[in-house]
Image 1 (tube, rainbow over the protein chains, first blue to last red):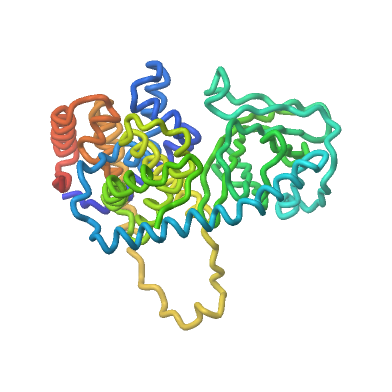
Image 2 (cartoon, each protein chain N blue to C red):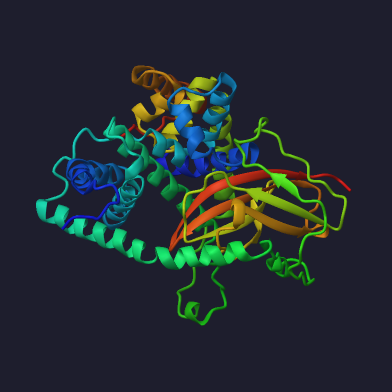
Length: 242
Length: 184
């Protein structure tokens, strides 16, 4: 008899291999559209394959809602949760002014340049923040481009890639964080510190050309609220052979 | 106590809370989220509802709440994945490790090779299943429930059961040993 743990270990391998092959997980909007049957046959098949590679998302999107509360909480517990909820909401409202002030400060800056200082860890060279001089390249989130499955090719005219990662109607968060991932190894090659929301909801990222070898990459943008992080958008890109 | 809302919807919000909070909390618990985390997620869900309450017109309220709760769950799943990826790397020469007992002996080379061969055979057998059966088996191994598998594959629950039965039979024939019984 094959044991359950044996099967699960094998399934872990299958999933890891599949993720390398199919790329990043589907977005929430894609998942909801999939469940409502609103995708084209081609996109539906693509999302289904992605769900096989991300089974925990498959479970989350298909988890049935209980028909009733099943008496899971007593009246006292309900009241206690209600009080905690009020505290949570009022606490958040209290810090709203501070956040608005921080955003205004950010907006006053001439441009938001995300310095890729973290690269020092990987390359023994120092990169200082600078105002971009190379022609910036606007990246649209996956799912927002007309050809969502493709990897847009980065322009390589100067000594840096200047990328504009544009968020579309992002929800409010205390801060944001970026990660750059090597698509072939799924390894995070750089991640930012927590950042304030940028003017025009667009992050400007200056990446030395020498940092990115030819290949496929993806940039991920996270919204951060305390300990919680939410993946807001991914931007796939390809660096051509020089 | 009443939550202050901009549109004077305090009572409506509290009514929604009383009516649906327990179901939302149970939804997270059914997903095997720990008790305190389920409470945190349910609170986050209602906090989001509170913040978007001005746009809520009062129609299809359960659909509105269900969508919000599911988005919160999806975020939680994605955040856990990120947390795993960013897990702290422990250094093996750290003083805290000095008092640890030595690791037990691992399986010998012959056992490891045998296990590897067995896994390779099982993997090949799964790969060779017809697509519909393979998808069912993989989702089942990912802990999806029958109705969840049915929704994702766009088939009936009976069809899921049938495909899983056929897949088990095919694997048993191919490998000469059976799979564990399903708990559902």
